[in-house]
Image 1: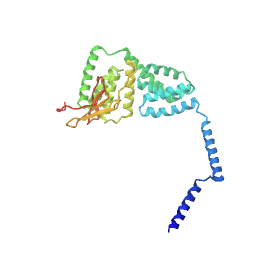
Image 2: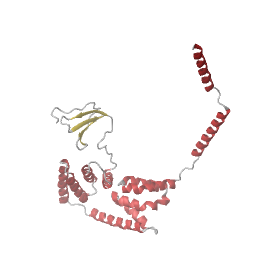
Image 3: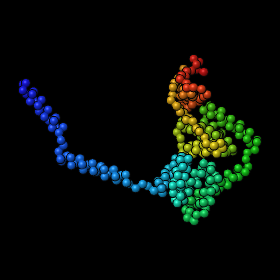
Length: 295
């Protein structure tokens, strides 16, 4: 039995040595061929022709209809502008889409320039002609509105109506809030803050499910705000820009307080929305608590 174990040990040692020995010429040849094939593939990938600017632009233009359909007007505008910068020769391809996006965003000055460019073309399709005619009418209506701004009594009435909308929103009467906010915006536009308030109320009414129409209105609201006071820096509406340090529930379970760096936020749990932010801390907040009375 002792000798049998010795033989088994010797066989195991012999097999292990053989496995670690030199590779056969056949295997060496196979490995060399594989290495050559890999090097050839890498060279092929490295030397593959890059897309030309106009090919890149064509790819961007194909994404525009989907962006417009989804209500992402700002995205569509950026796609068109980038494509035009890469390949001005094919700008005509997306001119009608550009004009529609500019009208929806309320950028009427730029829309006028696009209308003039399109009217100078002799190859407009029937659909493009219809887009131009519709745009011209909208621009004319807006020019007429701009020439007759609201008088003081109208402004006073709109401020009262805005207050009605705010009160309705506070009471979670979103349908009334949407109606009143939009009525004020229709009279006072461009007024991005009011349009944003109307669209936010509509989003709350839909329990956070955005529609293409809402996205279009949000983009126009932002465009109007930027036109009035420059680039707008938006905060994360229901999120945190820094690491969360502390959370606390109210005793009735209706409110959640969260501290993220130097900002404390209070959430209405039933609506999953921030109802208030406490700002102005000079250093990082490490803890947040509700008072025993939950006030």
